Image 1: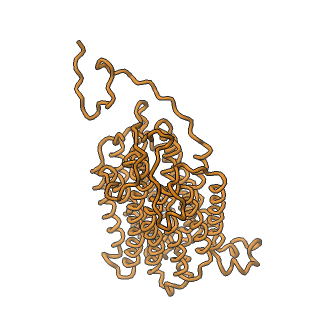
Image 2 (image 1 turned 90 degrees about the vertical axis):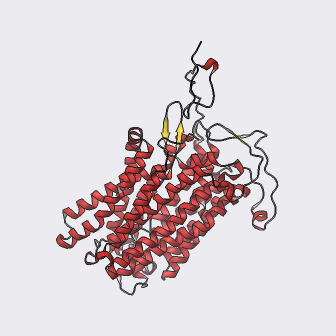
Image 3 (image 1 turned 45 degrees about the vertical axis):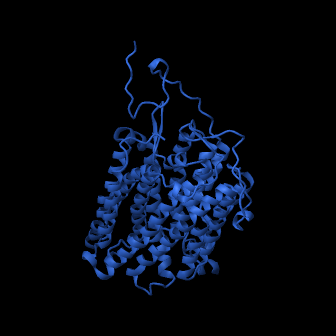
Length: 507
């Protein structure tokens, strides 16, 4: 007689015959729909490209529009406000755009976001006042629900056998965008001065010195709009037309796809005949935990990333490094490139050796020395100028930021476990899609998670950059108030990490 097996939390839910476990054969992997997936990757590239192109020159742009009246110590207030208002307007609308995509289809909402991205970037480059900058960024945030929409579309064109492959490719788009964006912004601002042979006689580019880099990213977004219109296929069945939705007409009830139930990422059947659920029924505890870790890490990450260009641009005597936009763009581009290469080469072995929770905690902790290097590098620059030691410290800080981003992969893309090969990928959106109560609410569930992150990203830039300016102007805590505050953010993020399970959730 076979001894009876004891079931525990790691026992497979599907039993085996005669109580004997056999190694299940590997499921045949469905080929990834590369045509549609490649189109989504191209469209996704527009997001980091347009967001990062302004980073190198935004402090100088703020200085040029005259809102600071020559007071460089107040630049941080306005840089933080520009960044935060984008995320604030995005937080107010992204859930509604995601819910709308469940009703009218993903494609119309995605194209609306690309249109807003393109128009807002053209407006940004043509702005001559601070409020012009603010309004263009608010327009961008209000019309942009594309992050959650793209996650939903990837989930809908894949299945349990190939979604992990899709997840391994998707982050590369962001790394490409965060590498190219700062280079474009740093190299193409003030083209009449940098390229006099080409743009020297152009009155337009002397009047609008930041239009060229903005127009490059805006034109790319416009081209993506046409690609989406002609080539992208809808991934869900629209329940009503956009006109009916926005004029408040009721939708017809949700119908099953081809009469069969949908399959979630864990292979379970999902009833697609149900309609959308109210917000309170989307607040599943497991989703809130992983999304909460993502949100708090996003708070720390956006605070550091938005302070960094201001810190580089502020004069040395005020506690910065006094770098030119082209130098700032090069540093940020190298940071994006190094991040992408290291994630591709080191993430899997570190994940397998340390486990997801430990990797998250270590990565988050590394923000503490990275933040501490801000005042240390500034002190060395005041004492010795921009010598080799300063650049060594800047390089060390960038390395720590890269290593911290491994935690962000676990926070942003958390958790999926693919049984059989034990291929473990930190993929939040897989978990969130699988946790959606029904297929009709998959877009709304992604929108809810992204809304939490957008709220934190709205708080981070204005809080950290205002603290940066306050530290300079009022000499609060010896001028180091902003760094203590960011360390507090990192500490909260670290505490949140202890709520994560030791092993990835098996969704």
